[in-house]
Image (cartoon, rainbow, N blue to C red; front, side):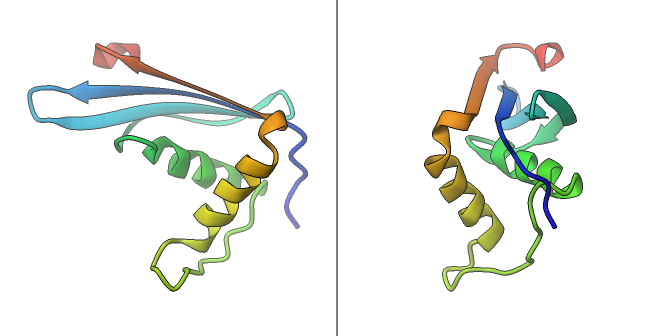
Length: 105
């Protein structure tokens, strides 16, 4: 059984390695005002940090891991999480900052 999420705060930073064109991110996840996990440096562009957030929530039993996929091939857990975020936007803060230096991640 998943733990209850009363509020969710996501602090993410993205950095683009201009030399090679890759994008990386870092993320901190707070649930019910408690830090439940963070990742300091991970490959992923655009909204890839949200996949990292979901992985953190799943590893801390705040979100179930069904391992199922939609007919389109998109992971069902990611879809369900996206829908939960839309429905509960009054309980969620997402702060994303693009930084110019890797050391600022």
